[in-house]
Image 1 (cartoon, rainbow, N blue to C red):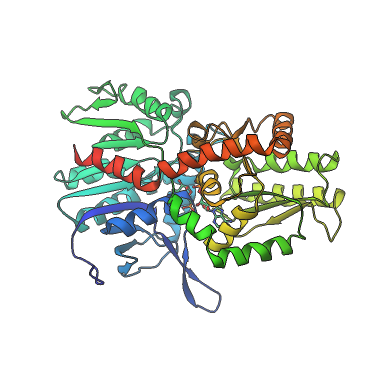
Image 2 (image 1 turned 90 degrees about the horizontal axis):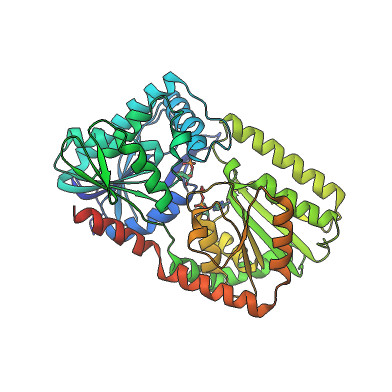
Length: 467
Ligand code: ADP
Ligand code: G6P
């Protein structure tokens, strides 16, 4: 494969994020770091396999970065000014659409200037794609930040095959209808040939909205547009590179890391683990409260059990994320001051991102994994745990509000709003017989190793290329 950046490509992914972020420290030193979140985790292996180009923002404001070749594909960084980061990314994407699409678990904020910036930046991404795509190329647009790109791109390049995949939930019509720009956003997606969602419910929500548009009809998973096109609308539950995670978790390097980690945690009998972006959709408040109460009530003994919670800082300038960070710090402090000792902390909370090998070691040592979002499109952490943890004496506690609950049916299901119910399920997951747990783990492992990220990408692209 060529190491130089190609002029035009037949396959393009466009996402707000590139797989790597450019970071500049106080001394002006530049480094590239892996970008956070499920979208990058899922798409990186797809690009490594397929080649082509990835168009996205490189994570730093007010900076133009030249295209470069990375891991078998081209990277085309899209610049954003500091004001665009504030209005398009932090504002419209993450303070308007993100909460609205996650069932309004916090109040969405509506600002007309943010909407203007959102349109402008979506246009820029579409222009960049129109420039890089060869005649008849396949372009795969990712996620809510680029909701308007399919229609802009179709206007610029009607020869392209355009797919769109939404990584997050799509809300019911009653919530969506609050959006002052709901018509434009629905039209934005109807520019694609194929629109994919994580669950059938999300696809149905979108179809219900689409057929309200004048001149648009919908039947059997298709929307028929005014200009006579058929848009296929379907669910494609996303996954992970399951074998890649498993191989990493069982590698010698990670095994050594595992032993060290256990030691660092004081060699407890039981390790409970949670790992998320620090996001209010992840149910961290509820989860920490539930485990904290179990410690306080003496149902969990801090000499035997450690709860390790990792939370990657995320969207730190958005108000609700600041509130969450302070709340969680306070909650963790309160619990640790009441239970455990300095030598035996009940709750080990780390507000950081860790390298993939360290994360794999954490999954390997975790006897119990807690994944308790109040709403989540899929949740890849749940799948990563199943792929990495090779001991059958393990358990996954999973929120029924994560897309993953549709597939990982053998998990210990919880409603994160029901703290007592969650506490009871955590205790059950810890005390069930090894036989019951092994059966559950084996069933979930089959699911995660059958339905991998390659299957997901092939399903989507086969459907798109058949259009
Ligand atoms: P989201 O996309 O909303 O962040 P997912 O669970 O689908 O949620 O994906 C999160 C991804 O980010 C996973 O691949 C997970 O391993 C990774 N991740 C989350 N927190 C951390 C962390 N503290 N360190 C390293 N990776 C993390
Ligand atoms: C979720 C979203 C992605 C996003 C990721 C990280 O996975 O679906 O689109 O990239 O979170 O969030 P960030 O705002 O840091 O890109």
